Length: 541
Image (spheres, rainbow, N blue to C red):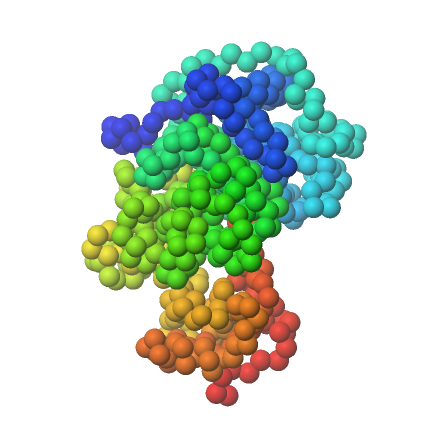
């Protein structure tokens, strides 16, 4: 990989801390971070705090390649510690704030984390108490820093890291091989019994943010609104790091609330975000959306769910902001996107095309043959954005990455003649109804065209006779009354084959969501099976 990308010149051989130092030296008084409480921090202020943190971490024994775990909300301290870790050559391990002992005990032990930085309290939860128990089984975890209190014995107030540094850091200029060292260890949040530790280098991360900035026309004038958690790859790369790479401003929101989101976008004059598509829909659903000056907001990059054409059109008309479709995963962050000036049918009817310098392909079931345009197969990507593999996990690395560099996504997609892809579902998100395969995403996109539906998830539920049937979980618009016959007629009018029609309907006020804004289909299926929604009989039985 190093040889190929060095020869092609696609890797920038730059680190985030180098870019940050240049920006801080050039524009020290520019606002770098706008905190969720409205507080501001200039690039010069960030630089001073980063030097203190790096020096004090070094004095505490943190060295290059040590893992620093950050289980923090979207607070400025997350940014400061990540920059300090990068200064030291340490590895940042971001963790979602809603992780608890079950997830943390595995991740912290597997990563051999040396340092953890946590809040004293967030959303009413006592983190130090949890870590006091976790630490008993984590011999490698030497230091726990607590924001907001002193914490129990054996933990250190975060304020100590901001004191005059006990060590002065003068790192040698990075050499070519240093840029290919791991700087991020991000664990997947899938449904597997043990998450995978995705390894990214300076080069794989810096390629992504630099290329995205060029594709979307982002500059130091942009203000990046970040409501997705920094502990997730979406906000880590496309919120925090993107804002710093362009020398712009990072506007943080730590607790999701649509009214607060609108206030932040207006107050900070936000221009760009990358988040899950439901976040965009929720902004428009707010009864106060027209009461805020959102004229600065120009690009909302949507991931994780399709963009209904009506949503794209309404968002542009009412806010003046363009929604663009994208596809990505922790292993490559963004593998496809569209420029904001693309044709509307590409922006909203596809998930974009390969990022400059990268490749996309659709493979058959054997992963040995690329399929022609229009055929459904497994989406794969190759290029300078792809991670280095899975940490200490050679078997799953071999199962996911080919010898010639392809990352296989487990996503099913098609590609048109222009190279634009369209996801049709996960390999695991197909409904096997008596041997006939139904793409959940295909049906969901058609149901979203029903005027009374805000959000929908088609979920495979077990069936004794057919193996699986489809259950449509929907959130109605304005408390509209929805029935299964109504939705079936809507789909039949669209020409949907009978075997694809949902046979159950569950109406909800809201969906269980991941922290990054994705619907937790496994939870919906689990609740259905456990009878949470009452006795259910399939349509026509």
